[in-house]
Image 1 (cartoon, rainbow over the protein chains, first blue to last red):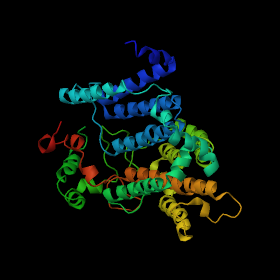
Image 2: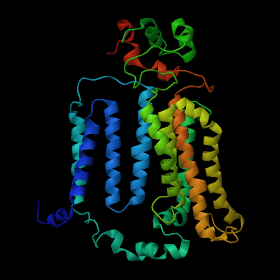
Image 3: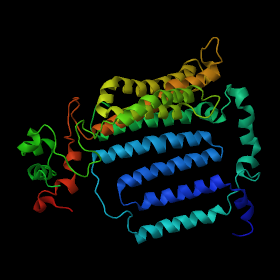
Image 4: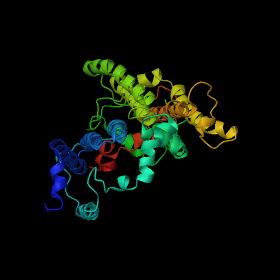
Length: 189
Length: 223
């Protein structure tokens, strides 16, 4: 570790560190598992780890969404898809390394890792979200007076950016319709 | 793998053609009440169109857990203004409760218990309710979703307008659409909308090359 990183590293608690290790290991296992069923299950574990990590970084709304949608619903839908198709039995546990894919992933990882140097530490006063108080602090300070709810995230979603949320809700609705069209059905149940 | 080579050959043959052609050309396949057991399935049998194993442990667990999980989903939805969460998260949790029940008691049974009308009413009604809440202020001369123009006499129109959007709108849409995706994925690729269809999932059933080709190696042995 370089000297510049050591203060940030020193702040990482044991629980966070183990969550990081868990998330990285499950992500690698998802990528390399030979069996699709194993990959789906490990992917669910990865999402659960990410949800715990979001909770640690004080984003409970995101954590709930990650846990409910990614760890729960997506895993179930993927399992259902597997059940409707076929699953091949493999002797090998792990996929053999695909060198072009690994090279592309490695390049992407390197590119992202370069930017990590400039990302401010968690809770740093230099972070853009704090260094622009005219915008961000206004929402934190005025949300209750303006809307009457305490959850700023919900106030932004439902009130300040309500039109965007309406578009997103219609997208979710359209996803259901699209599934019906793709599967050539007229009823869900 | 090769317990029923006739059926497997038929299933392989009609890969190129439509569903009806395949069934017409293969008597064994259409005549048998249940498709033969195939290895490689997640579960033993496709009795309900989807694999299902009745398990006392899972059913008992789901019976105990689901009321709490559903209540938690309601709490997350209705208390979204004062604590983390909201309609999206709560709707997803409530839909996940339905998934849980379906896994414990069978998807087909859950499908019959939770009629298509409920799923569609949630998704469509949520979208319409969100649009209506947004358009009422427009009708009264304001902007889209201008909550303070909502005609709520006693309650704070901004707060309860947002809650209505979250609860009646987003939670209903998300839970309805997720349940719908679940059921429609469980049913598979099939134009038949009667309740009793078993296993003949059209192109999905036809397109199972690793299993179906196994019985007759010359026909479609892909592995």
